[in-house]
Image 1 (cartoon, rainbow, N blue to C red):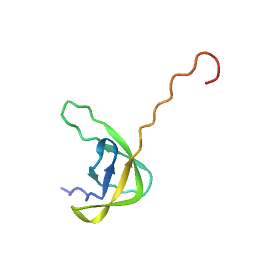
Image 2: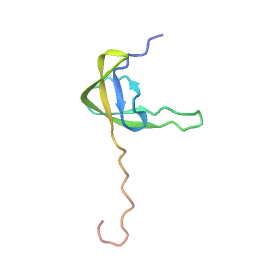
Image 3: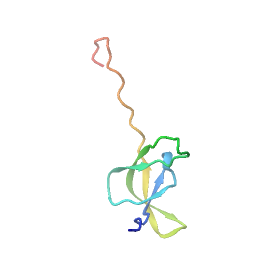
Image 4: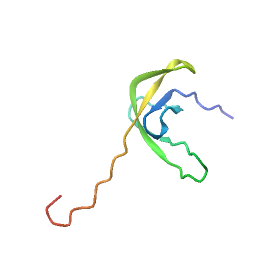
Length: 86
C-alpha cells in the first residue's frame, strides 16, 4: 500500500475554494473533483488554472501553489436560423 502524495496546492475560488490537493504539473489547467455534500449528489469536477502565486497556510511551513478557478466556458448558443450569419 502506498501513501497518498503530499498536498501541495490550494484551490482559490469556485466550488472547491480552500480545498488542498496534490499537483504534479507546473503550468496549465486541471480538473479537481468537487466535494459532494451527500452520496446522492452527482459527481462533478471543476477546472482550475495553475499559477505562480504561492499561499502560506498554517498547516505547512512551505507555501502551497495557488490554483485559481477557471470559470466554466459557456457553450455556444444555437445557430441563428434567420440566415444573417451569426
